[in-house]
Length: 420
Picture 1 (spheres, rainbow, N blue to C red):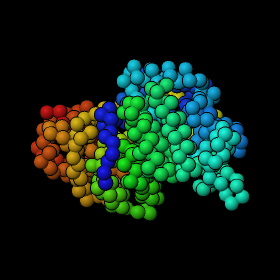
Picture 2 (cartoon, one colour; picture 1 turned 120 degrees about the vertical axis):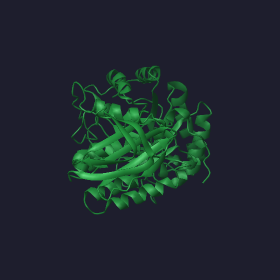
Picture 3 (cartoon, rainbow, N blue to C red; picture 1 turned 60 degrees about the vertical axis):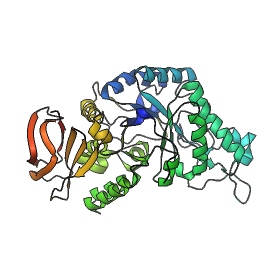
């Protein structure tokens, strides 16, 4: 597969933090969230992804506040969050700290009272009776017609507005596979002409690497769900990772243990994975790909956030997992994790993951016990595993000479980073 666009350099080895503005603070505004940006910077976050910031349709609105994904105007700000000036200030603060801002873009559909429904009703799909329609079962949105070139041009102009006027750094494109790939290629060419951007697609379709830098690892997450329900073994999960590896030269996968959809509709990472939630967080930050952290995971957040009502995150004074994620995001910056090859360590235990990452003299060893089984012994034997290594969490130093035996307790995770 031919990849049409190079990824921006600052996104290589990056991590993404998904921001739910409505639920992040009591005020639920850009200004209130801005006070958290320095903390996130200190935690090691490099890219802030803001869920949709556009106004929400009133007609057929779900709940009191509605879904962020039912847009009524592509070039205006949701007044719930503030105004365009407060958004620009948020972007400026992030940029001053060297962080990047990407925004959620919902191109497949709009809300029922989007101004295009009155100005350009021919830009929408219609049923046999001439009524606006929607093909995916969502009650508060209607589908756009991508056979209409005028609509495509207007959509791209709206995307360009945020790049030109607000200096955003990229897009996370909602349900990207529901929109033709040719549109995305055209949109990227025209938006990247303003400045090179980062493009994240919510889809698993490898064809979309023609336009996007990163796609979701949905299949991996769904396999994990089955694994923790004891419906499949870890070998089945590995098979998906092997499939991803076939496309590693043309595209990157986004790994996560939670996001807005999973948290609100399917359960928190603690509901789904129990005590293994932190173990999997270690995996997402050390495996080949880009890692995602959802709002509040560092707190941690044990509740499902309501999608259509106010349901703020109750922040601890110091988020309990702040330093846990700070360590993980630090190791993500190592050459071994950014650019390194991967060697899987056989463990003789179906619930343990062990692998080495290496780039030149930079070596990282990751050991993960996904089970409640205690005192699991594994042996690491590899030519890369030689030198002085530091346990990333205990900070103790160890000398290894290609071979070592480890004993893991239940749900234990370890990362060793070569220092000499």
